Image 1 (cartoon, helix red, strand yellow):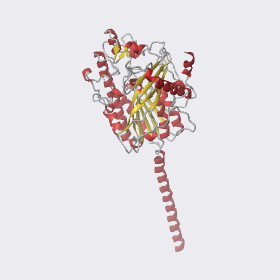
Image 2 (tube, rainbow, N blue to C red; image 1 turned 120 degrees about the vertical axis):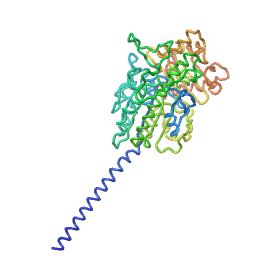
Image 3 (tube, rainbow, N blue to C red; image 1 turned 90 degrees about the vertical axis):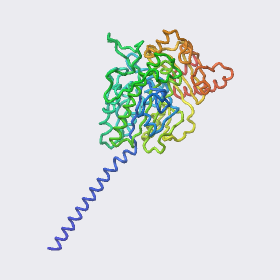
Image 4 (cartoon, rainbow, N blue to C red; image 1 turned 180 degrees about the vertical axis):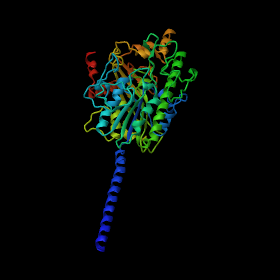
Length: 499
């Protein structure tokens, strides 16, 4: 009897021990699963609308207040030679999300209203590829690409209509708050959040008649600023006399008044970035999240937006990567927006086998490490609005830029928000013939070739294309540009033959 009792106690003990071991193994597995999943970082992709390097503290502007973006740069890497490939909203966003120039992905111009450009149905975009790799995906704010099946996100936290005064994209702190549940979810899968503000795009204001317009002359465009402000935002007001007028703009009262409004819009989006970063920290995700900040194109003034001059395509890029070893780094590699999708897929371990992007991954330079042979970028612009046909292709090196205007017989067309800007209207009414440092006549009627020495002429106003001393260089750059068109299947390469 005693022996049987001893055996029962021992058996019970062994069963209890086995149960404890099973629970311990299960618990360890539960802990290790999220850790393994998060070996692939979360990705937060922040994109603003029409924000140039001219209005960021970390890029050298001592007046504009951008403390949160500057803090992101101080904790990450600031790219000094980052370039969009086209200074137009929808085409640029299509490049950003596909790694393909817009002449290949099909979004030749704006997506909304009568413009109605769309990418080809067989294009595989960044959110689709990340979802296939196991990421949760969500977008909030301005979208402005199509079709939705190509740029599919699992979760739409807010719909964003282009130039809509009621869009949530003008309220960046609200945008961040609405994304809170998504970034804080208890889910072992990594996430991809596409956070796209309307700021600091010009405001399409509604007249008492109900007609929308950008023309507010003589009052400056408000760039989305409004007297009642936005939830969670402490508006930063600037005086026109304090702003810094970039060299490509005229120093006029109208220009200064508009730049003051532009700065205010930039400071508002900066507060949205700050709130989003705060939520990432509160949720415990900040240290395992790759954060990217860029703009789609340069500021919405003539001379920048819809051009391939540097004010239109030389853009901010700040990347803060998990596990960084050199916070506050500066990266001088020349990257373009075609490189973003392959880089993010590389970071996520999701680069498709045999994928043929026009860009390449700069993952090795995310912490500021030097990248060899990153010394040129290409630009490709065809339309903005559907009536604005003006195909341009460009090659930019560290010293030179070649622009080919493939329909140079046409006058350069103006986007509605630029033509109706008080800055442009004011100069026209004053009888001005110089816009910034460029003659207006030269700005509107352009030659087939433009060649600039950016070291000697950073303002891109002295065209060397017909200079006998630069013919060999010109032909070399033309050859390289045509080779780019050939390998990227540019339909406009035929313009060399028949026009």
